[in-house]
Length: 80
Image (cartoon, rainbow, N blue to C red):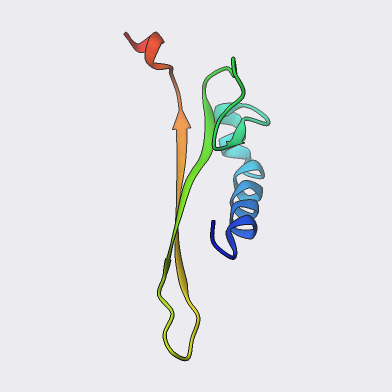
């Protein structure tokens, strides 16, 4: 987890949970960190793996963050 990871994840969560279009598609309070509670009804969103790469220089600090955001629509067992 990088230096600004918590702030970044909090901002992503706030943005997604405040989106009325997304809320209409998945339902209220169905955005989770890393894993959804067991028996959560589909669909839902998971804010997943985060990676950070240092791109700083001798004079400037810098990081690039990549965050996986997954929309889960059906379980593997239901699919087969």
